[in-house]
Amino acid sequence: MFSCDQVTETDPKFVIEAFIFAGESVGNFKIKEQIGIEELAENEVLMPEADVILIKDGLEYVLDFDGEVYNYSGSDLLVESGDLFRLEVTVGDRRATTETIVTESTKGTYNF
Image 1 (spheres, rainbow, N blue to C red):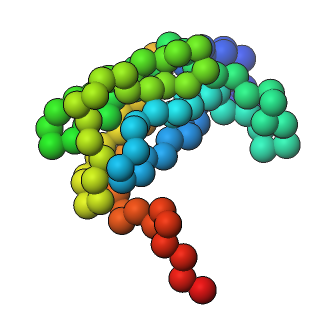
Image 2: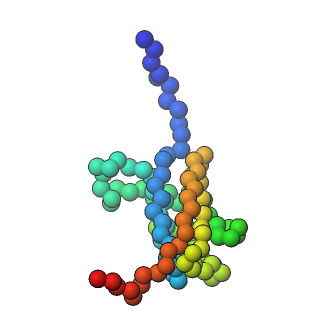
Image 3: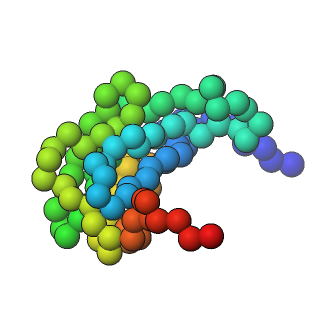
């Protein structure tokens, strides 16, 4: 029998919590260390060392960590329905990417 007794250090796995809405500013993104599903949300560990970039129409918008969340501090990023966004988050040697299309705002619209 063989066993592996060598431990390899890797950068921690992470979770991304990010929402964008038409007509609203971009921010309140959280990058957190992955914790077990049985652990409480108050045990979350934020990751201030992440590089967070939002891309729209080939332009990159870098989000800054303010001690709690990542925000875009510029005023040149408009979010409109139908926009395609790509999000890239890098922590150490790990990278996560995703894309989304902004849906039409339902603010003030209620259908029962």
